[in-house]
Image (tube, rainbow, N blue to C red; front, side, top):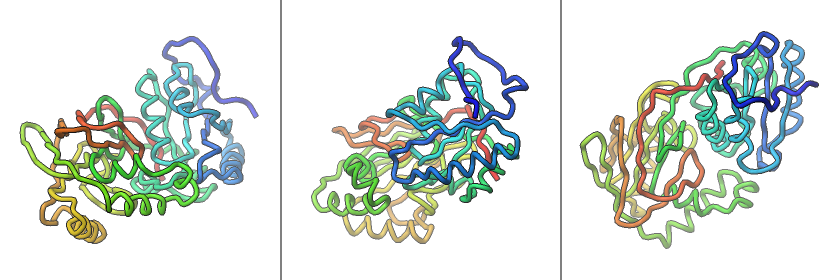
Amino acid sequence: MKICWWSGPASPRTITPDLAGKVLIMANPTSGGYRAEFLDEVRKRLEDLGCRTEIRLTRHAGEIGEICSDPSLQVKTLVVAGGDGSINEALTGFQDHPQPPELAVIPFGTANVLALELSLPRTPGAIADMIFQGKTKPLHFGLANGRPFVLMASTGFDAEVVHAVPLTLKRRLGKLAYVITALKAGLTRQSTSLTIDMDGVQLKGKFAVASNARHYGGPFVISPGGATDPGLHMLVLERDDPWSSFCYGIALLLGRIHKARGASVTPFKTARISADGPVAAQVDGDPFGATPLEIRQTDKTVPVLVP
């Protein structure tokens, strides 16, 4: 099996005919959702369809981003087998690539919200067929302190949980690790008031999510549009005490968070989230420092494969 990328001069290239069918699949073998046999089935199906395909397993943190930012990366399609954090890493790397390839996703992670957004198939054969067929949509994203996010950038309780959940527990229990961590944190935390300035309008709240996607934390809808539609929305919750959090949770389950008392969903182009002291932040489900957050819409897109 021939390798699908190589080192070369750091200059823009166009995909030549002999590279037109090349596919590079990247996966983290230490992640909880990694399945070697699944990837091998995808590879075999792609090769049966005539695509020169390689599976490359990462050897250190940040390797997906390093490869995606390399101008000498010469493949038609870069496939990320992982969760939303791995996709974010690829997207961040693409910002430094003059001609990024098409992006495809094999949902292997804990949440896989983007896979839900794109209605991606779940079987090896269907995923391989999707990659071969090459139908794309423009994947929009926002920027939080210059870092791309394809799903959300948030600050408040959910970000505190993302910062606090142990990696070993996440790998062992998946989504349940977040529930356990949230229950522990909810008993002892002290919330901080946030100031959200959006396009000249100021709001106050205890929790803020800048969303580029319809879904949040799984199948729960928090805003109109989606990751393949332009535009950002800000969800602000005025309170985060236990009773209010319970009520907001019920509204989220019912798809009515935008109608809940003390909640608002607002379209915006630029925003700043700040607080009197640092408040934990997260981007696409991974820790991302703390406030303040400067968030803005961007016109850039990446072609993503869809069914």
